[in-house]
Length: 387
Image (cartoon, rainbow, N blue to C red; front, top):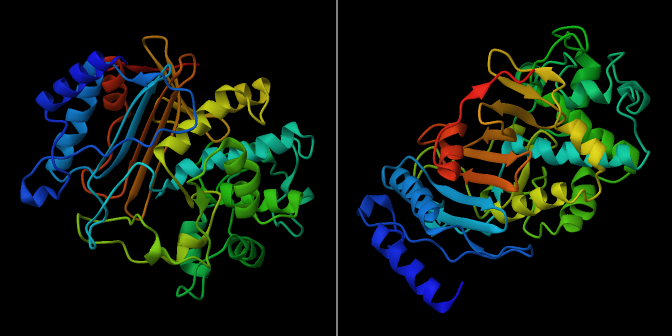
């Protein structure tokens, strides 16, 4: 923008209430937008003034009502709006910034799927590879990568059976612990593989273990070296059992000052566990659009429905949900929640757009996807059956 344009833009933001102080809503003062940390990606300028004001007003209003605490980024064809609202740690009253990594919960599955699909493109795996061919002693036959990626395996969710089978809940559960419980107790499949869809975090824990078996590298190390660093996601990492949740810069909250206690299931990864930022996820979006380490055909397959997610109008591909709208847009997305963190990663399939919202409080519940899309487009689209 020219100097005149910047002056006008700043003035309009000030008039709209965007520039204000970033203290607790308890003091009844307004929110200040932290200075954006511009990533190493090609962006021309901020979004247009009208959308920037609309987006900020939406989140600032929710923040002042104690219904939102987090970071947001709206990107459209080289232009973006980003901001942070509230605390990284409400107990210490440290302010949140967009470059602070947050737990993205099940949005981590998009990155796990990316790692598996890139190994398929390298010829080290096939989509129909059986899990018994990769993991020694795996107790279920006829379950393939396709079934894990699309949640059609029938394997029950470890978050449920670990409550019964895990004997020591004072230490972090690991992926190997989950595998041990599958081998030792062999919980009954909920349906025959490929019969239908049912979301299960166990599928993506197993995918992380498969990455380790194929590469002979710990999952967190492989993701750091071959995914995060390759993409340029400099503020991203995977939480591991040897880390302290207490010393993470951003904490998950049940309310503005109450931090979630440690949970023994924090130690698993693949299904969750990625800490990252809104700008790093934008880099991931750019990597996908440029087919970095993933072929166009493989990416197309990942973003193609492999199963319906009834009763909603969603479908599941490989690590991505798919939703069709009445304006002919196809949205590829994933949401997540865990221990006070919620994440929304929304990508347009046929437009250079994405929305990333990361929160660290349960207050305010879930934001409807159509509401977020309307902030970008000016009106709410209607989901339709795509198949």
